Length: 216
Image (cartoon, rainbow, N blue to C red; front, side, top):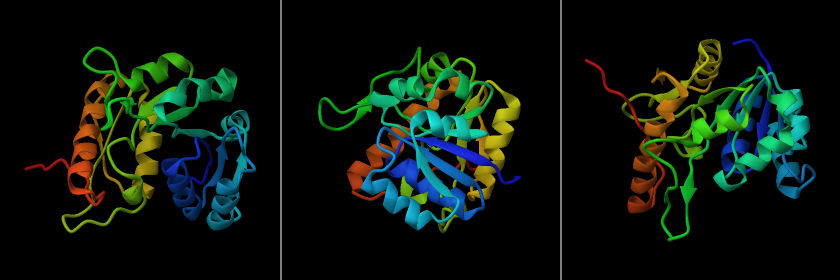
C-alpha cells in the first residue's frame, strides 16, 4: 500500500497501538483528541517518531486520507460530531469499536440482532465509507501478530468495496490476512464475535489469543 496520511480518532490503547504500528510502516499518523497536548499523547508521539503528530478530532479527521475510529463506545457519537461531517466525507473509516455496556460489571453488548455499532457509526457518519475491523482482537496483538498456528484472521465488513480493499491492504501491512463478510450489517455478527475474545480474556486473565478461520 502506498504510504498515506492516517487520522485516528481516540487516544486509548487501540488508537495508540495502531498509530505507532502505522508510523513504523512509514505512514503519517495524527491522533485526535480533546486534549492533544496531554502527557499520554506527548509520550506516544515521542515513541512513535517523526511521522507521528497529535491534534483535535477535527484536525485528525481533516489530515487523514484514511481514518481510524478507536473510541470507547460511549464517546463515539460525540467524537464523530467533533471530527466534522465534511472531514469524514468520502474517506475510508475503520470502525474498531464494540458497543460494550459495563453497568453490571463484566462487559456485555448493548446492541445486537437488529442493529450494531458498525451500522450506527455509518448512520452517524453517512458520507464516510465505514469498514468494521480490528474489533475482534486485543491491542497487544494488533500489529504483526505472532502465534504458533500462523497469523490470525482479521474479519471485516462494510458497504464500500474500494474502502474494504484499502483497509485489507493496510491489514496486510500490519500482518493480518482478511476475511470479508459483506455489508456493514455484518457488524451484527462481528461484535458478538468480539465477545468471544472478551469472555475468554476475562476467564483466562490473558489477552494472548486471536481468531482464525480454518479452511479445507
